[in-house]
Image (cartoon, rainbow, N blue to C red; front, side, top):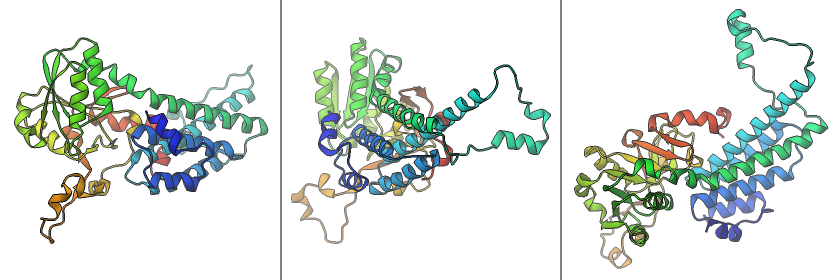
Length: 369
C-alpha cells in the first residue's frame, strides 16, 4: 500500500527543495511511507556526493536534515530517520578505522592496553573519552569502501523498518489470552495486525472499539468482524463506563519520546487515565523507528491543530456564537506512568526502560540537529 503512494510522490533523483516541498504538502500518507521516502532521499543524497572525509558527509546530511525537519516539525519520524542515518555514517567510519588499525598492527607482536586503574587519572580520562576524528582524510581505498558500506547499512535500515510489524505481531500470543476483553481506540494498522495474529494463533477474545476522534473506529470494527471477532463499537464518551469490564488496552503510536511518553491521536490521554483508574494495563504496539530522542519539555509544541470541520459538521458551525473559537487537536501526549508496556520490533519493554534504547539507535552528538 505505501509503496504505491511512494512511487507517486517521490522520485529517486528528487532534489532537496523538491523533497522539502513534498513534505510540506504532506503528500505521503502514513509513518511507513514517510520513513521510506526519507531513506530514499538520503540514499540518493549521499550517493551523489564526493566525500573525502566522514565529517563532510555528516555535515551535509545534518544540514539537509534540518531543512527536512523544518518542513514538517510535528512529524518526528523525519528527524528519527536522519539521526539513524547519521549514526550509521559514524559507525561505518569507525569500522573502517578499525580495519586500518588491524592491517597496520604487526601480527607477530601483541600489544596490551593497560587498564584505566593502572594509569594516571588524566591519562586514563584521555584514553577513555578520546573522540574519533571524523575530519581525518581517507585514502583512495577507504573512500571507495566508505560510501558503499554506508549505502548497504542504510538499505538494511529500510528492511528493518519494513519488517518491524512482523516482529511486533509475533508477540501477540504473549500478551493476549483466552476470553479477555480488549479495548482499542480508533484505527491502527499495527494494532489490527496484532489482533489478527492473535486470532490466527487460536485466541478467543472480545474487542471493544472506541470510534476515536476521527471516527475511524467504524473501519476498525468492520475489519475485526471480518476476522470473526466479537466486537462492540462505542462512542468515546462511554470509555470510562466500559473500562471496568476491560482486561487490556492495546494502542498504536505516532511517536515515542525519550522519557517513555507517548504521542498518539487525540483522545488517547483520556483513555489512559480511565485505564489507570481501573488498573487496566495499557500496551503500545510500535516500531522503534518511531522512537525519538526528544523530551516533552513543552508538550503543547507537539500538538497539531486541524480544521474543526473534522469534528463539527459544517451545518452546525453557522449556529455557533461568533466569539466561540473551536480547537481541534489531532494528537495527545500521554505520560510514561500511564503506559504499562511497549511492544516493539526488538521485544517488549517497560516505559521506564525506553530511554536506554536510544544509545543503540542514535549517536548522542545527533540528538540536537
